[in-house]
Image (cartoon, rainbow, N blue to C red; front, side):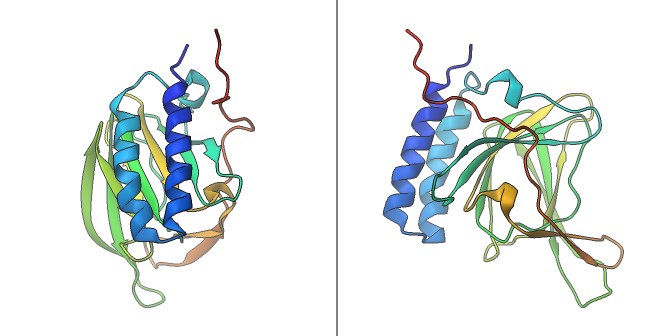
Length: 196
């Protein structure tokens, strides 16, 4: 049985932060980093159903969405070598690696018809955190840095990310395609259960 109380505490703490921050991105990112760091410090709380890899594509499991959709908590589960297309978020986000490692490649968009310019890569190991937003840099590709095992990262976004209209960008000509990611399951973990 997972220690779901860790996730429950995180949700409560992040809700209090969202109340205090009043939507100010820098306050949410800086205040959220230590909360996320504490959550991913232990690896005993993520229920197995939200840590299951798919053989051919990464999985995006909703763990919690604030009732006012001010933030969402998502587990990304990466099979060996899996990656996203180049994409944006349109909202702030925090990414913390719970298991394994992942590589984030940042991009800059150019003139229409030109390929996105790769700005560099960052490898995140278990316990590492990265921030994204339209103001910090919002276009990237994320990959499992490990070819032979699953990696899991926990993402916090400044919206119900599965319902946000976003874009992918073709790596050859930068052509944008709109998408809404949705989620890989129809359920969320029951963080409110307190078995005796």
